[in-house]
Length: 180
Image (cartoon, rainbow, N blue to C red; front, side):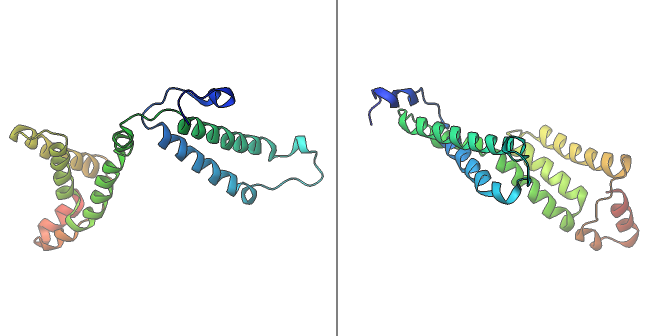
């Protein structure tokens, strides 16, 4: 189909933006998921008029969402292609990197302990963000220590000690488990 479509399909033509197709496909997939799960999530009330059913407005919303998502996807497919779709997708999925950092932090705390993991991740995130001077690395390490002191000593947040703490002498181990 060419961009100079006439007639009814001309209605669906519009200026295309990067990421438009991916967003439209994701919304249609989500709408279809809601539509497929709708019967198992709602029950009609017996002896009630159709206009008073508790499922009426949710059904209108889900059906409308699915219809408009399908129209959005159709208009996205019919509009001219522009470069940069994958670059836009990378920007949208950039949050997954920081979710990975968080999961790594959560997995390492029981092994290394709260203090070493906090300092390690503060320095690593500063490095990742481009702050690579010795001064900035020192600030990152001090920030990690400050966060640990604030949470463990100031706010009394109980974070389990790391397996690494077991290697410390008993007096020092108790201090690290309680305060760091």
